[in-house]
Amino acid sequence: MRSSWRSYNNQPIEPDKLTKMCEFMRSLTTGPFGGHARFEFLESANLDLKKANKLGTYGVVTGAQYFIVGVKKQTPMDLEDYGYLFEKIILLATDLGLGTVWLGGTFTRGAFGKHMNLQDNESIPAVAPVGYVTEKRSWVDSFARYITKATTRKPWEQLFFLQGFDKPIPYESSEPFSMPLEMVRLAPSAKNWQPWRVVKDQDTKNFHFYIQRRYKGRKYDEITRIDGGIAMCHFALTAEELRLPGKWIVNDPNFTDLPPNVQYMASWEVN
Image 1: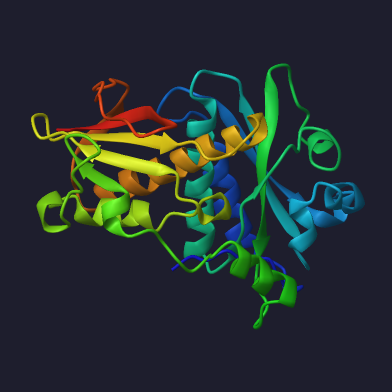
Image 2: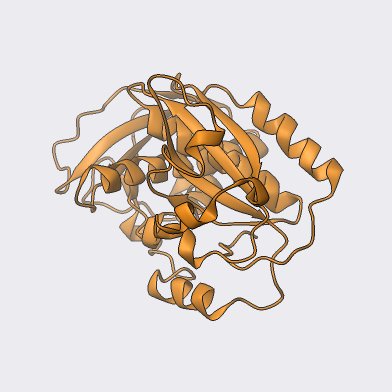
C-alpha cells in the first residue's frame, strides 16, 4: 500500500494516532542485531527548517507538520538495525492512513540534532515527515518520483538466487517464502536502487541477505546499509504474519561466486 509522499496538507494528526505512534516508537529500542536506537516525533513549528532545507533532501518536502526522527548508537550493525526499526514505524504510519518519505543524510547537527539531546556515540542518519498527504502531488514531488523511478522494481531473477549467485530461484521454488521475498522486492530504497540480494541455501533452507554497494563515499555507503535493514524488516514481518518461524543470525556461508561489491549482511535461519 505504501508509497513515498513529499506533499502534505495542514490537517493535524489526531491525538489517538499520535499516542499510538509515540508508544510504538518508545518500544523500539533494540534491533535484531543488538543495535540501540531511539525515535521521537518533532513538530515542524519547533524546527528551524531553513537550516534543514540546506541539507538538500528536505527541499522537496512541502507542508509537513511532523517529523519522525531516529537516533542510533554506533555498533557493528547499527545502520541495519536502524533501518529495520525505522521501517516498522513507517509501516505503522501507513496502517494509520498517514503518508511518509525517507530522507537520508546527516541530521546530527542543526534543526533536528539540537532537539534530540544527542549523546556521545549517537547520530541521526535519517528523518521522515509524516502526516496527511495532499490530493495531488506537487510538481517537485512528481519529478522526484520520476527521476528515482519510484514505481518500478527489479525483476525477481535479479534479486533472489539459489545456492550462489549464478542461478536465480524460481518464484514457485521459494515457497512458502515467496511472499516474504516479494515484500523484500517491493521495499523502498534510496533512489530505488534495491541494493539487497538474497540467496536460499539448498542444504539448510536458510536465506542469506547481501547488499550490493553502488554508492561512492561514506554517507552513501551508510544509506545502502540502512536499505538492507529495511529489506530484512519486510522479510521478517511478512514471515511472522504467515507464521513461518525463524530468526536472524550472522553466519556467512562464504559463497565463492560473489558479484563485485556484494557484501554479506545476515541470514534468516528457518526453524
